[in-house]
Image (cartoon, rainbow, N blue to C red; front, side, top):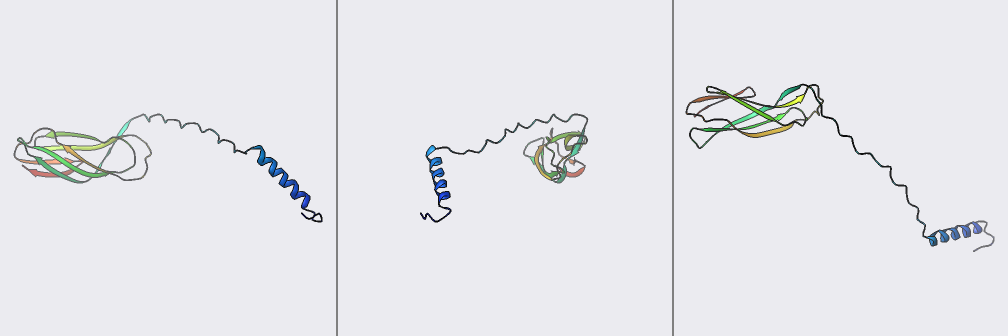
Length: 147
């Protein structure tokens, strides 16, 4: 060390402090992050429900090997929004006409994400079908079949 250097005493003091700190084993630790409260569960939205029909793009009717015939529908389409609600299927029969409604029930005025959600399902029609011509309406879309 050079006695004529004016920084020499400062360097010696800094080196001594560093050695003292290193010898004590004191470690500087950051403060723990603040605790985040758990998210509050949203209460279910209540009120009147309205039907949101599934948009139907294609329907295939498949007769099953049985007598009287059993019919199943292979349905493809989409939900017009991102609301998470179970899909419901209702069907009724009037003579040789079968009406199938595919929908979700959503609270009125609910806000949903703007996304299209694909839908596909195989739906077995209730009851047996004798030989003849039938009209099957799926959300208003007509499919005609002769057995």
